[in-house]
View 1 (cartoon, rainbow, N blue to C red):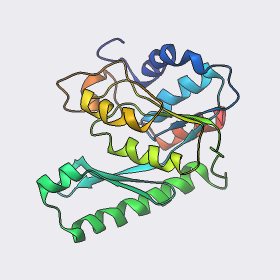
View 2 (cartoon, rainbow, N blue to C red):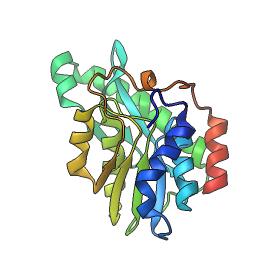
View 3 (cartoon, rainbow, N blue to C red):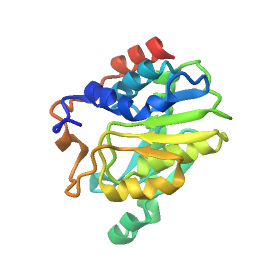
Amino acid sequence: MEVPIPDRHTAGHALVEFLKHYAGRDDVIVLALPRGGVPVAAEIARALNAPLDVMLVRKLGLPGHPELAMGAIASGGVQVMNDGVLRQAMVSPEAIDAVVQQESRELEYRERTYRGDRSWPVLKGRCVILVDDGLATGATMRAAIDAVKVQDPACVVVAVPVAPPEAVHELEPRVDEVVCPLQPESFMAIGQWYRDFRQVSDAEVLTQLEALA
């Protein structure tokens, strides 16, 4: 994979090379973690001729350091906490609850924005490919995995362009396959590995979903 990665669409093209064995299957569905994961996932869904939908997950940012995930929540009431971060930061239960409530409201808003009246896809017995533009702690992806597994899929695959090795190793026992071609030992933020890491708009998310749903 080219480094720095030119943009999210290029990242998706690169990941397709590692996912070709899922092409042509009628049980595959690609679920993107919005918003950054949607352009990556759209390229994968298009290449595999698979439907695209979103797995809505919200990071629970550490109070005072919101860029650091102390956990995550996902559709269906799933909540995953990063015990190591919580132990080190000594966050109070009240502070955790405040962040959970705030992010739950945002999750509900995004459900209405991205899905509207469209029902949640049936995942039972399907091969689910979860896609994001990268992993830092992996907390949001762990929440997504838990939310998907509740629906008894046939297999769960995680596909991301870049992540630290420890995040990949933590996910591997939880799913059937993890595809992550770029695993730098020195990792500070996902954006450092992209040339273009501009924010993805809601309009772009909706356009991709309408085209590939």
